[in-house]
Image 1 (cartoon, rainbow, N blue to C red):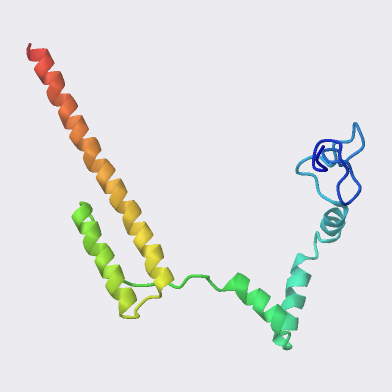
Image 2 (cartoon, rainbow, N blue to C red; image 1 turned 120 degrees about the horizontal axis):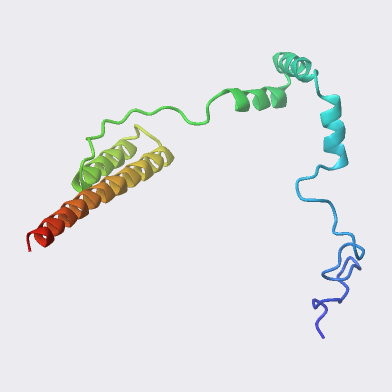
Length: 151
């Protein structure tokens, strides 16, 4: 019998599969622990004062507080500008991806930014492709219906 089977004790001494006493399933999903409940009870009406204090600390030279505030204020991604052709078919998507690759190679945008734009271009190209197929199927279906109605 392996020590990892049902009923076998683990290193902590608890029986595997039985972390709670019989009939005690533990805390309900979504319920909050004691420290969160205490914090929620103390915070109403204090949020503005806490933010003011955080700003005071950052202005006084508290670097971790300054970083904390800037992380929440400044946007994570910078806007980038790339001249991309209009994407009306898969060939246009190839041209757009070539433009993205050239921009990355020239150092105009970072590789991560290029990857993000390339993902968007590829997704849009898939949508264009699906739309084109959908139109073709609708055309074929209407032609089939016309042929059936004539015969």
